[in-house]
Length: 199
Picture 1 (cartoon, rainbow, N blue to C red):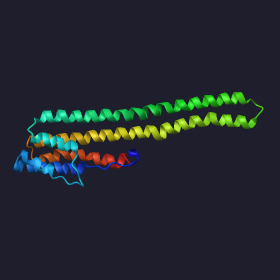
Picture 2 (cartoon, rainbow, N blue to C red):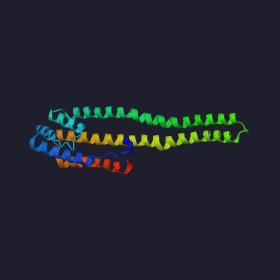
Picture 3 (cartoon, helix red, strand yellow):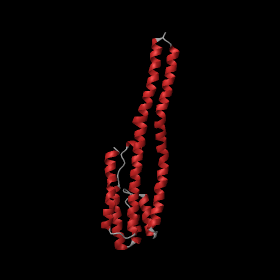
Picture 4 (tube, one colour):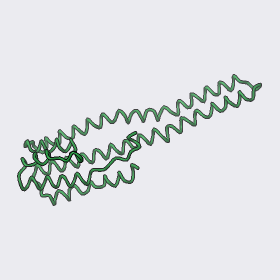
């Protein structure tokens, strides 16, 4: 069902939030960020991934360590999703084969029907060809597109989380919010990808 729903992009709002955090950190210090993230709007909850990163900033964790921990989170998520991707890829690969099995069964029925019963012969021929058609249609119109869409979403997910890592580490290093905006603006391409490729 999730494949049929266009995901809501939060890249632009996440960048704005990171810039707000950056300004707060430069004005009031890194410890002030804990209060900011604790005052989240229930209607617009903070990304747990982002929240975890900011809490590590508040704790004084080194940027390299923050990056390593969050990259590991991305890796674990991707490994979990890869199981679903492999399932779609496997079904797409097997569908034509199952269609051929049906074709062989249909041809056996054709041979068994002989030429004495035209109705049975026609029915058997129909079975022989329709199963191959179903196999090809299921593979190329359902499972292959589903796998492609999941891979695209997974790639966008990685880019979005890498943007958060870049922003969190920049805040930890005290980067100016103007430079941070320039650094993160390139990630807005994720919004364009979601708008064009995931309809």
